[in-house]
Length: 334
Ligand code: 5GP
Ligand code: MN
Image (tube, rainbow, N blue to C red):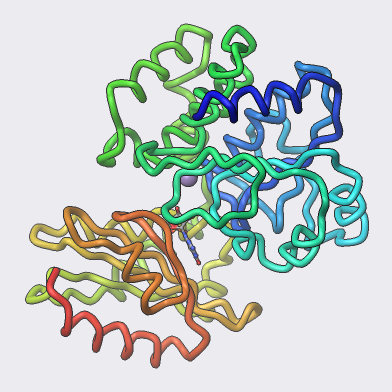
């Protein structure tokens, strides 16, 4: 972070403020962990923070301390709009463009209060007064640890804040496996463990805490998997009907896309998930090595993300989306 930006944030936080904190739509472990870590930090510093999530967060993150205080925009637009309009300061975390908040974008667009963006996605939009954006970080949670440290407030990081930070580092790094996991990541985690963060309990809370439906959905996705070995690609699909038949709950499809990469010789994996309510096919892309799925998602599926993990959507049928994907895959070199 630039010195002048740190000083500007210090000035903004010098007096108690009403502060709205916003994750992206469909918040994941990093979005939830970073917003909650910042929430607890601001509370400790005599501010009035409130997290407004564009939509519901998945059940497997509900154990995070403070999650019960989160307001859900799409469930209570009137009240949430009022909260946003009354905020003196807005933090947007773990996303780089206001459209990632869905319908909430139209409220955010009109706000006069300054925005602070903390994010690790490529190509940040220019909407924030202060932009702390750096793709070198594996998670926004790791950036929050640094952000608090830059403000000279490292001593404020306690077990509660540390638990939230640890969660996002763990989930966004694929349990410390992805390329942006650095010595610094592990040094931060070591400090968090010294603060009492339950590093052996949290993975269980996150990953061993789902219903039988999730395993059945995973089984279905593995059955549906197609391998295009010649193009180092594996993809799978889940139709709305399949999801319904296994009592799908939000979060059940998290991580399934990665199974494609576990096949020897596969460098590009995708999952296509039908959502009839939103009339879209939600897509996740993963790669290992040089193939840039962020660019692929941006160019062809109205999305974005990072080089090795990105997402997007399609507004045509599942069949048509797959056809388009297969046609594209045969034309690119992976
Ligand atoms: P996931 O596949 O786990 O939903 O997302 C992987 C990465 O891509 C995350 O960093 C996420 O924020 C980003 N991402 C997912 N969907 C979209 C999308 O529709 N648009 C953009 N710009 N990024 C996305
Ligand atoms: Mn993230």
